[in-house]
Length: 569
Ligand code: PEP
Ligand code: MG
Image (cartoon, rainbow, N blue to C red; front, side, top):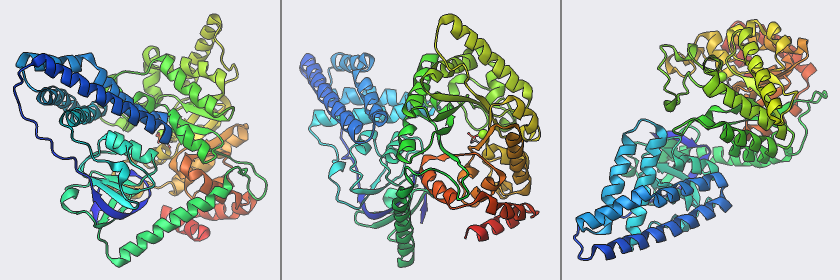
């Protein structure tokens, strides 16, 4: 068994097909006619651009516009006059062949990008090497590996997949992908997820551990790979895969059904998203809206802050696509474990207790918060947008944010720009302080959304990412459960909606407790929605009261978990 990074979930079972690009041997050759050589380069460049455009168009129809943008990015590089000018100058000045000039210039840029810390720049290095090879292949008349022609049931194995190789994949034939290099956010991983192909990346030395024709099983959720597994393992994973596929099929019957408990309590079942394109999955899995749009993703993977206009377009797109369904957009939550290099933030001693989320936004109103709030208010004219403030600890933070919103509303009035005057402003309840003061917050916030990922961390004083102390990180700990119950009770008492957008909202063992406590809204990853609908519609909230009472009578997380496990079965 080999461990890698889980890049795209699901179980893949099939036969290894090793994909290796033929090593191109590039020599420094002198040419007689430099002008003719430049023309040869330009022709090859044109052909590469045509091929790339075709790939982009194919991706746009098969996968999605966003994925096609990766190829559009390659096109931009191919059209960059700085790059092509430098290659042409190298050919002319050194009177050398195009292949070598391309090698020299592209490698130089790729190395510069690769040396930068920013992940986006690292990706640029991969893109640059990818286009370099493709221009050289055209020049040398070598065709690249045709992944679209792989036989059904192939597990694609490669050192690293270039984005253009991944783009050519036919998901009907590729049962899984394993690579030696790459990361969760590499373009190939993003494409694998979009194509819903299970993938494990960064499996050390994997190319030397597998050969063509080997049987391979991969678990894309756990990041595990087995080569020629024993019968027991093979049977176990076959069963796991069959179960997953069967469950997926069965759950489809819940599409279009209302989320109502058996005693008639209506629940809002909504999704967590990070980018506008995630809305496609929300609609596919019949989400009733968005309960958490983590806007920090709009700020990541780039070299400068998104402008008010760019943010407006993104928020508007989500609001419009959800056509009147609620869309809760959380204002920027960076700091903690989420870093953004171009913002120039100093490393905090205690990042999770430091300069993060609303603290940072209120400190940087002019360059960060005002443009985001303006974009949100402007977009509110196009759908049912609600604003949510993260990591609130004191009522002053909510008041200050609301005062800024009021200021911007007056500004928009003066400018004659439309917005929703009654836009709701709620908070994430995810700190111990906000939980203890929930009755006070409930009077001034329009809604609550419980962020159990952080609430557990801040209640238990346990870093949510530290393996050594992860035994303390349990939402079933009675302290966390009491906090959740209290927050819901305070919100209900004040008549505001109380939702939950932390991971606990989709936990089958937690759902009965949350229903008994009176939670109104459950927000989770889109792919978890139908299973949650099935569970919720099967429960009666009144019958669950006794279960919740019993669960709350225990003193340890272990006892609660064991009890809930036996209840859920
Ligand atoms: C949470 O803390 O539960 C939450 C949903 O927010 P994040 O995971 O982005 O901190
Ligand atoms: Mg949080």
